[in-house]
Length: 303
Image 1 (tube, rainbow, N blue to C red):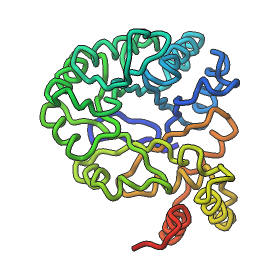
Image 2 (cartoon, rainbow, N blue to C red):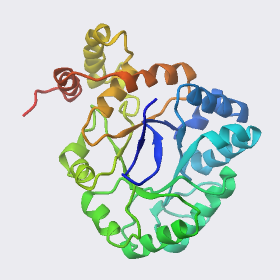
Image 3 (cartoon, rainbow, N blue to C red):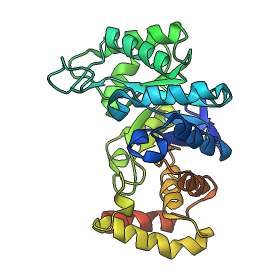
Image 4 (cartoon, rainbow, N blue to C red):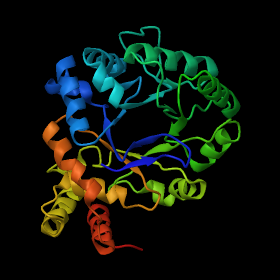
């Protein structure tokens, strides 16, 4: 598995990242032993980086990861952890919340990061992302919290998720060290970062973005999704050319091919699909094949 730095002087992660958004949705990973088995399956294939967030699993995934890591400190020592903060929704553990909202105030970011460290059972997060822009908090205040956490050694790097290029620039202006990444939705089904300037910005500033939902949030395998049916057919016609690559591998390879050099986040809890997906790291899609998959997903030819 290829390892790359997010920025020239930033943290180094595995090019494919193990995502935990739906970790507790699967019976296989609802126990600490199941979570640990998934982490080990990733490590067996060179996936050392784990992506999570305080809101995942209705605020339960970080605790589940922490319980698994405490069972095997050796696994904990071999992985890098990315977490995200800033989204708050009503749920049984917070009955006082009335409305879903964003909160990237300095006090909330620091409190969320410290709670993530406690739940995960680690001293430092390798990367902390502001999950979504908070429209009611100034960029200067958000940056103050990230700078504080960096100075205290509680996080090694800071970044954002789902930020527009203008929002990224505004927050960057108040940071003491460059933001490390912008985690964005990107797949053959969602090509917004190509058109809204965020991937152009990543290349200009020389940071690598991260792609969430690279399989279209399940659309790739949905028999009722017309775009999914089209792209699977296109992938089937290409599989032999790429040594029998599965749709998972070809979808991740499609993401990795972009010149902004994205990291791609796996959403599966199944070790066998982890194994098939990592083949993407060795696939160099030919230009026309990349565009053929774009065309199949979008249902049209390029402009």
